[in-house]
Image (cartoon, rainbow, N blue to C red):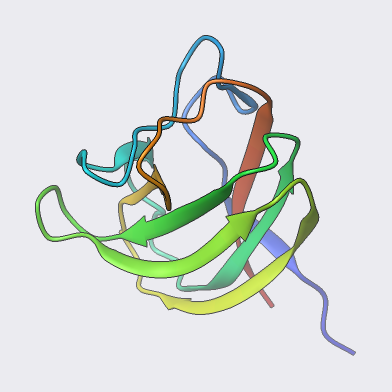
Length: 111
């Protein structure tokens, strides 16, 4: 039996309050939430969202981010995707408006 194990949490604050730290619109660069996942390789992200919006989760250095998965829409869940060791993780709205209401938590996991 496999268990999902957290390997990287967002840089503090761990829960993103979008009224304090808005998630940028899709026309803006993604907002970094994890500077470095460390030496472990991730297999996906778990998320808890109350924003009600679709949010892109990206991996890679500034200016070269690659979409890993889409989370949100007011739900919680697990999305699979390959996350290399020492990855930078960032977020951006999948729409043309910034996300300024609700809470979000995204955690990189392994099995």
